[in-house]
Length: 84
Image (cartoon, rainbow, N blue to C red; front, side, top):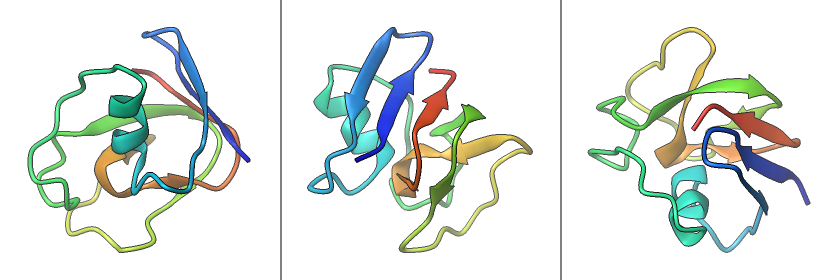
């Protein structure tokens, strides 16, 4: 089970497969992060990925900036550190 660290917030949580995305995990752990469409189209939820790997199991319409991920539609495939 990957660990997800939201570095700026000081929150580390075990990935829970019942969550649909990293954004859902963040919200379940009390974080209030920006988002818009929750479908990977607007990039409002993009955050810098410091380390680790994610995948987009349902795809996404917009590409995040280099070194960033879309929290609303990504899930971790390893331990991940996010600058959020």
